[in-house]
Length: 263
Image (cartoon, rainbow, N blue to C red; front, side, top):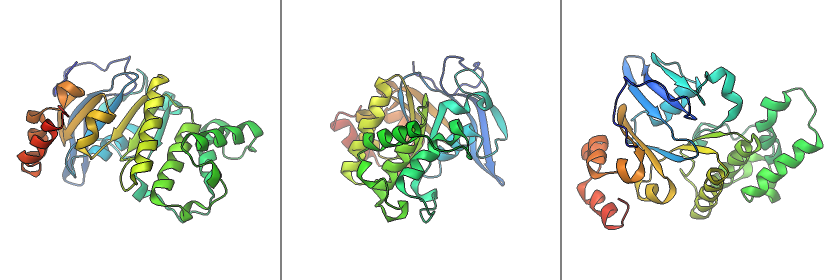
């Protein structure tokens, strides 16, 4: 169902991620204003919008990483604090300190700390989980490589493996395809689609409009406020794109998307 901006609706208890009236400000500058978002279960949702629209802020505010001025957030119908273990978050690669002295396997094992604790000894079963996660992203042969020695695409795969090790129900990814090569992008989207097939829910901040229809089944379009959300066929339209991007999205680019069958 297509949803336009309406903040008078209650939170959906069935939604993996439901947001109502979310507002965030950095100083005097509003980053998000009264955003509503209801993510469909077992879906792949792209969060799109121009630079500075508040896409990354939306994920961080939902996770409590940045404070919100107002609004409600629920995870599977409950408060974030009680359901945090069901969420896996992959941050932007540019925000990570890649000089941190850890090898690839150690980074993946960090995804298990919420379950096993920081001080508990790593067991053989935990090692097996990490190795399986690395195999799913094609990085099993790099387990002992220092994380800073990897290419950008390889680093992104490792962080995805860390999230897979958590065996979460909701995966939140902040621009997972930014700065990666074509092979890595194909590998990542394959893993994400398999997660959806397994009944998981995927939400990703995404910047490449040309791949929205191929990669995702739902879209949330924002520019400080929510423009539209819903199935791609209903929400990813010329009118909504023009409203979200304005003059920053040339009409010719929209025409190319239409001619390519993207909507």
